[in-house]
Length: 301
Image (cartoon, helix red, strand yellow):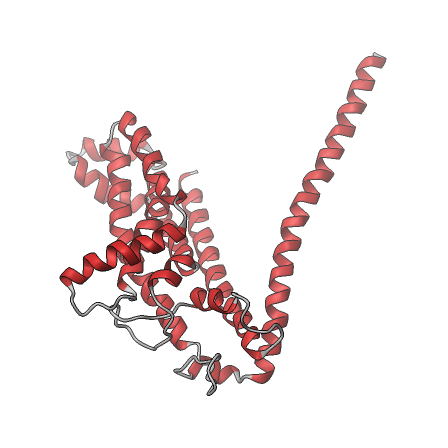
């Protein structure tokens, strides 16, 4: 009896210790996030004390490192959205088609083989993707589009789409695979073909999960740094032409963070203003994706 009491007390002590340990780990992650947000807000507030927030969002020039300084975020924002839009145009149809194949057409053996191979793309360093876009994709595209510049938005956009392809295909396939088998069987019982079941039953049923995967991929593309820094150029200009050099928000942060700009200067504080805007974009996209995934779980679980 006493042995059982000692074992029970020891188990309670171990449980209390593990509870405190897990709380410390959780607190570290929350504290780190709050520290990042606090740093961004503090440095951005210093920047907006010297630069009008109206001109920040309305000026069409971004030249904080030039003698005649302009602090209009629109060129960087336009470059970011341009490369991200091209990436989604590449990743969305390919990723959804791959997900439909793996979920509805592939055998279990093929699915187990293809899915890990596809996800290897997510492990390739982004600097490799950058040089792949610059040294292989751009010369290849120049044969078809002679007016394409050496640095451009099209090439990194296409390669970025390939980079985020595993995210779209894997999450979309998981959403489709989770659709109850009874829905498929009901479609077959009504005389539907496999294609009709996949496109008119499974895909609409998994639409929330597929949309969440696209939004997460969009968030990943917006935050990509090295690929666009290497292959897109460093020329901030307000344009929707994918054939010319552009600069994204992440590429500008990488440029200023090299150490040539003195700490505490207005030029240095621009990276925090740009970083804050980038953080807000990715936060909103991740919150939206989370809401969609919760909706998907509520429907089927």
